[in-house]
Image (cartoon, rainbow, N blue to C red; front, side, top):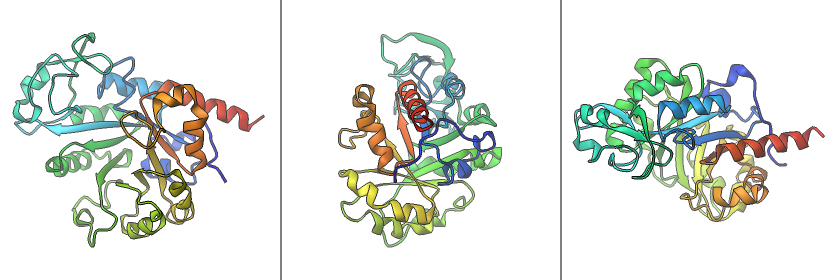
Length: 294
């Protein structure tokens, strides 16, 4: 049976990661990659507000530390593409990073300059409070303890999903020993081994993961894991970003053939899709929900 597609969910669940991810929630989750940046800027506070206004379920953001240990929200190793500044973030003091202005959209030298600066992780977490959930991509493992400390200190862990890469075949998962594990919802990320998805899902059961993010080379493998995903109450997240390389299941193709991409993934048991094409994706969701009630 394919995943039921709905365009909305109860308001009480909008800001709780575990409720949102539970398979009892029938929605296909909309994940806005680096926020809803098409009309704002990547990883900006404006992109958070735009995502909230668009009814997005979760935003994905990137964080890393400056030379003097301040966590800022930006994807690239350098300031160059997305801001008016230049230089490697980990080698620059916070004041220099803060002085740069964000560039609109995906950035670049020709992009408009906005009256907004690179936010701190704390500022972004305060912006989402009570409004939307967030998936934090910590760019460097060295920053993980500080990211977790920040989330816990702000008391916003129920709205946060953190993620790390794992190897399902490992003899031991060190992250299970981290002092924050079990206090903040965590999403393992790994590549599906052809023919071994169910086996690997059983290997990672100790994570008690509300959701997993995977890459795959055969969509049949995703469908084969449905029973085990249901048993463990794990939601399946797939990226259709053009840079994700999950066969030809990407945003560019989906703009012309949404059923060939998004519907096919949903039918394989995918319950969350990260996209750069938020407007097209939410339109697809609404059209599917409309068809379901005819």
